Length: 161
Image 1 (spheres, rainbow, N blue to C red):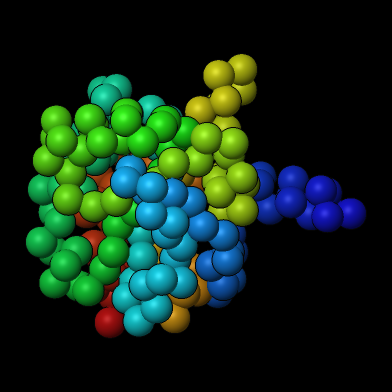
Image 2: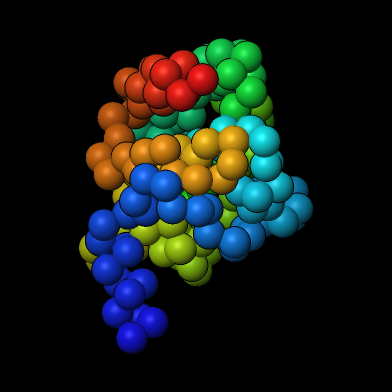
């Protein structure tokens, strides 16, 4: 039954109002991170297929370029993919990414958030979850456009105030 429920969540994403899963993943420096660590702040958890690929780089750099706007909104950004710490560290350094990148090597973190994986290759689909300051889902984004996602999230954050 639990596996069936998890499978249903994975295909539907987290519904608005749902509490953030109480699961942690290591960041690029090995520190364990979970959404509840940021209670009192909105949190964008964005899942992406792979470090240093064209779409993933575009999304990370757009979020980086808008980072001061996220900070003004009091929001935290967490990127998540299956790559290891070394890959995340290199990606952060190369593109001067100011937020944490979490390691989800086994896919359990993504599954808890209802994020799908790409068939065959197993990378995370480009999906995101925006949480409010109380750790409840504002919106699950099932199909993210790397070029416009940052602006879309910032618009929602402005409306949520």
